[in-house]
Image (cartoon, rainbow, N blue to C red; front, side, top):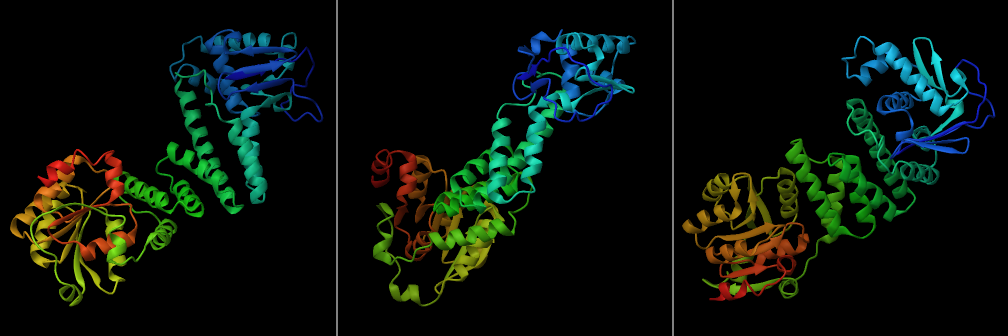
Length: 448
C-alpha cells in the first residue's frame, strides 16, 4: 500500500536539496497499498486523480531524490509507445498530482520541476523504501548485534510487497524483482549476524525465508544448515543439505561449495554411531524372512566387504565412498548412476553388497535390483530412499532386497546394515514405516 501524508500550504525553494532541520511534509508508504499522509489527511492510490497520475508519483518515488526525465516517464507510462500528445498529457498528470499532494503550494511542494523532468524533494518526504535502504546500508558498517537489530527493523518494514497496488505495469514488476533481491540479501545478512551472536532461532527463521524465496541462494542454505547444526538438529540439517544438493544438481548441474561440504562431513560424523549387532536390532524392523541363511562371521571377517554405490547424485556417492573407505571392514569399489550402469558394473565388479538409491536418472532402483537378482539371487542389495511407498516395499520383499533404509538416516545405522544385511531378511528402518503411517497393510502380504 502506498500512503502519502499531505502537507499544509508551505513555500520551498526550486532546487531539490536537503532542508536542514525541517520536518517532512509528507509520509509515504510504498510497501503494500500506496498510502500518503500529511497535514492531517491521508490519501490512498484512489485519491490521486487516476491510474496514470498515481504511476507518475510511483515512478518518481522509485528514484527518490533524483531527477527523472520526462522522456523516461513517458516511456514507462506508455511502455515505449507513447502517443503524440504524451508530453502535454504528462504535464497535466503532474498538475493533477500537485493539486492532491500539495494543495495551494503549486510547484514549491515536494513534487519539484527540474531541468527536463521531475523529482521528489527528499527533504520534504519521508519514504519507507528510503528508510529500508538506509537501514541496510547502516547495518553493513555495524557490529553483528547492532546489524541484526537494523536488519530486523528493515525486514519488518518491508514485510508487505513493494507497490502492492501496481500489479500490471512492467516497470512495477521490474522494481519488485529488484527489491526482492535486496530483501533476500537482507535476510541472509540477518541470518549470518544472528549466527555470529548466538541467536540460532532467528538465524533459522531468516535463512529459511531466504531459501523459500530463492532456492539457489547458497549463502542462505549455508546459514540455514549451520543454524540447524548449532541448534542440535543434525538430522534435519542433513535433510536440508540433501534438499539443497538436489536443487543445485537439477537446476545448475553443480555441487554445494566447500563450506557446506565441510558442514555435511561434520553432520555425518556427529550422527554416526557404532552399535554392535544387538544394538542394530533396536532401530531396525525385520519384515520377513525368506530364502537363505546369512554368511558366517568367519566369512565376513575374511576380507573387507566390497560395496558398489548406485546413486545419480555424484556428491552423495563421493561422500559415502569416503565414509566406507574409512571403515576397516568396508570399501567402495565403484559408483553407478543409472539402471543400466548398475547392472553392468555389478557384472564387472562382483561386489559383496550393492547400496542402491530408489530413484535413478533412467528408472527405479527396484528395476536395477530385479535385473541383478534375477541373475545373482544371493546378491545383497540395500535400498535407500527418502520417500517410501507400500508398493515399493512389497516389490523389494518379493525380489529379495535385503534392506530399506532412509537416505537421510544416521551413517552408523547404514554402515551396520551393510555389514549384517543378507538375502532372506528384508530390514526396514522404523522411520520409513512411520512415514507410511501404518505397517499393517504391508505385513500380511509380505509374510504370505
